[in-house]
Image 1 (cartoon, rainbow, N blue to C red):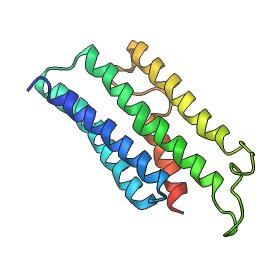
Image 2 (image 1 turned 90 degrees about the horizontal axis):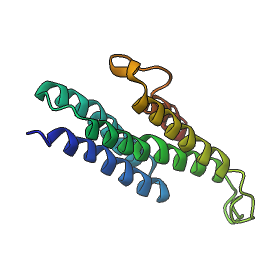
Image 3 (image 1 turned 135 degrees about the vertical axis):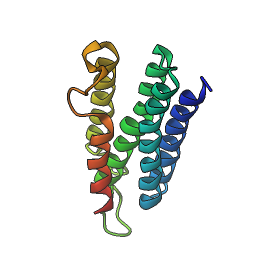
Length: 148
């Protein structure tokens, strides 16, 4: 039972990876559902760890790595897809034209997510309450944009 929270955390990571693959295939609603599943797993892993009394530093680090995939890289891919699409049929997308501006937010969001998660792991004051915007919250905003 002591490995159950980490298994749930890995489920978060897998859900985020599947969401990225779905974004690459322009399957927006399916990607949103997989990110919702990732968020549920992210909520459940800590809850289960505390309930079983098996919270660990390893689990905290693993949770941040999974969050980086689900709530850092996946929303970055969504932002890139949103900014790169919208072209008339038959015309080249900005990336195909050599314009890399859509990649800027796609890199900024994961970079700041990584900073936020690193600070969370080092800040002992964040055991009961979060400081700042949690990465799943920023993902919710990006998923909302995707579904518009």
